[in-house]
Length: 209
Image (cartoon, rainbow, N blue to C red):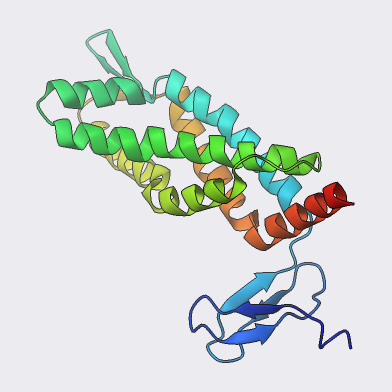
């Protein structure tokens, strides 16, 4: 009877409809046809994702407020942060590149962090966030446009090239972007849409009762 009453889930890759099965903590269910991961039984995924998100938000502010690196030439030190780099690209008549950098490394990551916190904070305290369906769709749409890891790779390549001609002093933001990359990856790995919907059903069930 318990098996017959289990909910159905469709595979995201091949659309095969299958029944959900109970899982032990940390385990994952795979599609019987194509082998794609259907869902995981993540332990405290909402709490862990929220912790990663809030930590990433603090590091994100630090990364944008402080210099990425400084160049020392003949006792003259010039430091630059990410917003300064965007402005420099704009003034050098590379407006398209400037906008791409601004959107993919500042606006989209900020939107992701704000949206994630806005969604998970109420769920943490067993409340329904207003407009949660729109938030989930928005997160799915903007996710591919966040490219902090690409920025980090570009900064490392630039540092390697600059050190051959100038004295380069790494700034606080450089290390912050490295930590931010790890925190965003950890938040993405721990986030479970299935657990979010389960928590929403639980909260709404309490409200109806």
